[in-house]
Structures are given as structure tokens and as C-alpha cells.
Image (tube, rainbow, N blue to C red; front, side, top):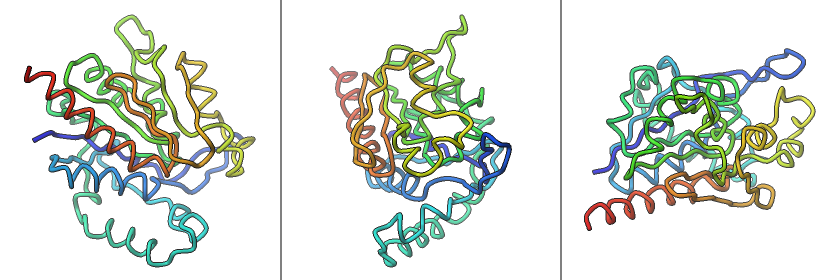
Length: 242
């Protein structure tokens, strides 16, 4: 059985360029869909957050406008989160995680990761430990891709420089109204760090697989990016068995 570390932000605000605090958290579907995919695949899923703080769902992710005005779909997401109970409300502290215990790490999205994961040395160390290993998969979706940024080699260089990566684009951030409010934009920062950034159509499903690195662009990419992790782990296991 494969073991997956599903990392979720514990931030409930995002500090904007002007210093104001914008209410945020994790994006519901960007946590739910990966959790569902990994669970259905029979994986052992461990939910972790910085300091083990109970994560906050971004209520905007459950707004009618973000869910095609489908009240049933919104309630289904609330029910899924509630059913997880203490698994979600009392997550494992990220700082206590031993990377060697996991076959994959996946960081869920939402603006929360921009606040507490994009400069977090602990998630950086976890990615840095798993990324070079054969048979391991490192992944993230949407703003969760920002958690790749603190992953450094021993010489201080970014371990994902030159890799093909996607994530929430500057175009999408601008469309949401945060283009001129954000302290920094994910696509711009990833490019500046040395990523070979590959964006797809705004708000459409788009997943990039570069070796053992899987990234998804936006909420529509949550399920397909998680499915790509399942496929990648199966392929790696098959290769190891030869």
C-alpha cells in the first residue's frame, strides 16, 4: 500500500500587498478531490498542516458562484469535510513528519499556502528529501505549488529549477481580482526561481507531469493531478519490480 502525505495550509488569512488580511484557507475541492482519489486508490493518507493547526476551509471555495450554483454539490463538499472528523480537524504537525515514511507528498491549494507554505522550510525539506528518490512522487495543485519554492539543495539552489511546472497563473489571479493586490504572483515567482512554467487555458483542467513531479494548475486540475500521482506511483512500482 502506498502512503501519501496530504499537506494542507493552516493559514486563515492571506496578507495582501497593502498589509490587509484577506480571509482565506484551503480550497475545498483542491483538498477533497485528492483525498478522495488517494483513498479510493487504497492509499494510506496522512493529513498534515504547519504546526498541526486545524485548517480552515476558504468559504469562497464553497460559494455558489464557484460551484455552478449547485447547492447539492456545495453541501456534498461540506459533508465530506465534516465526515473526516479529527483526521482533518487535528492533522499531523508537518514538523513531525519523517519524509521516508511516504511514497508521495501532495500539497492542496487555496490562497492559504501563499501565507504559510511558500516560504516554509519544513515543506521545502520534505520535497527536497523525496524528489531525488526513485519510486517517490512529489506533487501540488494550484497555489499549493508555491510550496515547491522553499525546496533547496545543499548548495542553496532550488531543486526544481528547469523542471516543467504549472500552477495558478497570473491571468487567473488577475481574473479573481488579486492581480494587483497580491504581494507576489505565483507564476511570476516560479518563473523567476527557474521553473519551466507551462500554463494552460484559464480555469480549465491542466496537469504537468515531469518525471516524478506532478503539478496541477487550478481547482479543475485537482482530480486529474491526483489521478496522475496514482498513475505515476503505479508506473514507478512497476519499474522497481522489473
